[in-house]
Length: 149
Image 1 (spheres, rainbow, N blue to C red):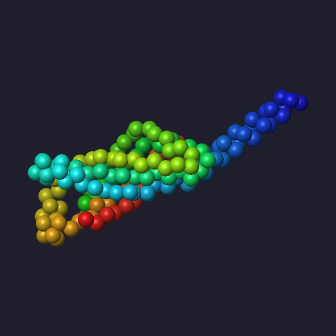
Image 2: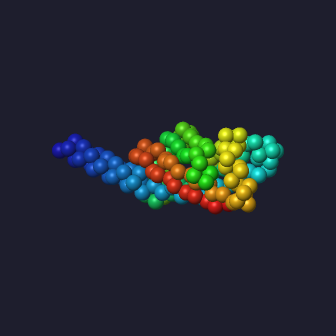
Image 3: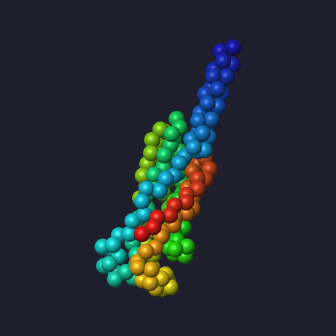
C-alpha cells in the first residue's frame, strides 16, 4: 500500500512539474530592448563594415525555468535582408525572472550599395527590423521588432 501511495505521489509531482514547464514555454516573452549601431567601430572601418548590437529581454513569469537552445534572427535595413544572427549558445531563463541577451553582428556594406545611396538621399534616415525566433526546450517563440533611426 505504501508503494502505491509513493508511486501515486511521484506521478502527481511529475505531472505538476510538466504542467509548469509547459506553461513556462507557452508564456515566455521576448521583448526587444534596443538595436544600436557601434558608430566608433563602424567609423574605424570607414563604414565598410557596420557593427551593431541587438539586445533582447527574455521574460519568464512562470514557476519553471526555460532552457534556450538557439536564437535565429534576420536583420533588415529598410526591408532589405542584410544579415542573420544565429547563436546556439545554451542558457537558462530562471523561473520568475528575466534575462537580457546581447547579440553582436556586422553588416558588410559592400553588398548593400543601393541601400547606402538611398540612405544618403533620405538624409540618413532608415529603419532596422529584426525578426526570427528563439528556440527553447518547450517550443519556439517569435521575435519581430523595428526601430527607426
